[in-house]
Length: 214
Image (tube, rainbow, N blue to C red; front, top):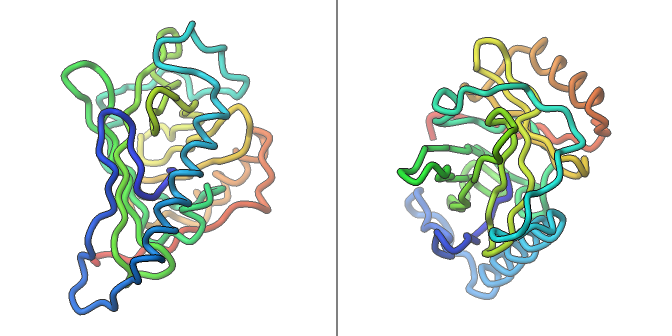
């Protein structure tokens, strides 16, 4: 999902330290510009939603959903297989989105990735999701910067719950994710076919490099 070093009111602005020893240091000014780029991208996505936490109910998404989703079963780790990315995650490696239910019913989210290669430091983001009533648990509002929330639609979910597509009514960004870092070629092609059916230009899709263990 949107990556970088930004969070909403429920999280801290954070860019993690490297998890790899003896890595070259990133100049302070470069880190500052990466942080600024992440802030701007998150703000742009939030602006697309034009919805605040206390606003009237958002409109029904114009993109199809996966139907009723078992929310508890959807929690856990999802490897980003491919995406139409936001600016900060345009060169993401080993991107993983993780969800867990909070006591208040909202969804704690952790997005982590490495920028540009498998050896760069890990960056992490902690947005918070809120399930919209009446959407079968498939439509969320994802909060990156308080008080704005961005539309997040579970548009496809495989019968075994192992693969999913997250999309948006504006068809600007999309994420193909799976429970494993690699998927079979036919499953990847099925995801591309589904994205085209949803109205996306798959020429914009980027395959996310995944290599585990790190």
